Length: 263
Ligand code: 3PY
Ligand code: MG
Image (cartoon, rainbow, N blue to C red; front, side):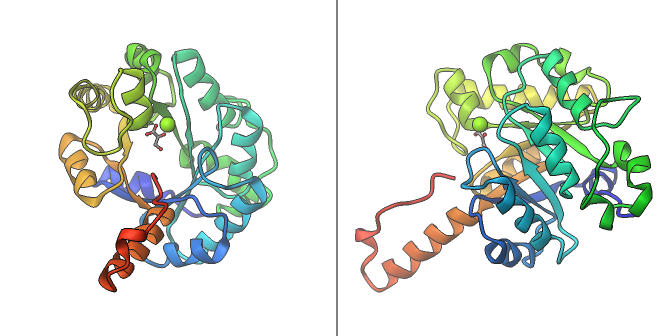
């Protein structure tokens, strides 16, 4: 039985350094997985990634003991159940606005009697507990509800009280836009900064793990100091564009660099 390492780290009071995957390629994923990330998130919302890509990326992550996480495109039971069947040990669900939507997320990711997840863990059971996978899956899988809208912020306390909701994940750029601020991951405008501090405090009060996206190790460590225990540090796309720009600048060609990944 493979036990979800995220929970073990949190139980010991630690934080998880999460890497982000936007590139639909198993070798790029394998390279990332072998660098020592505690978890890697396959981003099916804003990454260039469909289900077939996600499947090959999950198998690439399985060449290591890195925890496979998938951000689904939207709160929709079909894709949530499908990525869990494909071996995701945690899912991140965008734009959860209220307790009812948080309940839909928990329902889709848990087998009866708690939820409505349909039985068919065709890949997940291979390394997640064999034929007995479904008996432990409800206690093993983590479902992060994303808090990144004004409504989600207003309804935070109700969301945090939903039975079985163990973790949230803040999308700082969507949250910033919702609060009338610049869309950023790192140096947030004051209202957005205050919101992420409020979210961390409320999570602590309610015994819910707080996670957040950042695009730099420095910001990630600041968020850990604020109480976040699941921090995205950077992405495959950002690492490629930053690495290429750094190399080019060292041969005095950096000024010509064109596109830079915003993630
Ligand atoms: C956001 O910043 O809105 C995100 O969803 C980060 O992934
Ligand atoms: Mg977002």
